[in-house]
Image (cartoon, rainbow, N blue to C red; front, side, top):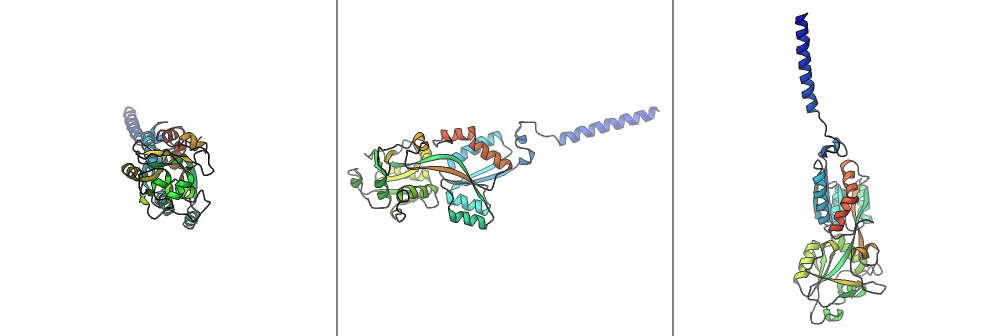
Length: 304
């Protein structure tokens, strides 16, 4: 009997040790720990976010802040323009397309042909600011004059009220940019009233908002446009008189949100259908208090 007891004790000890090792190997994160957020199946998820260069600095801040809380989710952020982001979503090389304009009908058709269902997520508001060199004497400009400048109808600063600056240097975004499209729709075509109007061939097309800002800051005869989030003291911002007339309006967050600034727009993230898992968690976080706080800090306009 003593021998049997010894065998049982030894087996019990071995079984206990085996269970301890097994449970340690199958341990789950504690509630609230990074690996437990949204369920263990989200660990190692990768989200590729690409597109609008207007949204790029904001997307980078979102990525950094979200990554600090949820290191189990891998987020890769890049720019290239709104059109580039939407193409990537259609091609399946991105989970999020950042866009500073609405998706075009032809892009929706391309997506449907590829079996992709673009779903729009409003993430912020923005104003497109008109900028000139700090030495430019102008303080405001009318919507009509601005359109005539970017179509090439007005070529010299004298005609716009700024004496002695000579011929204007137009600085624009490139055609892949949502800012380019938005400015064309709102300003160049006079808010869609004259679709035949287009950018002047003489405009210098830049690949990013930052490139536009830098060139205008260095060129006394230049005029360009950038998103609110890019403004700094290296350039002068012009107030804009709306197309219907009235007082000139500065591009501020308040004026964008109440629609009194005439060159305002919405900023979007597009996904392929309803997001789920880590992608849903990320977009919910972007639209929540923490993500929207970063929208405000970077000079954009948060969701009301």
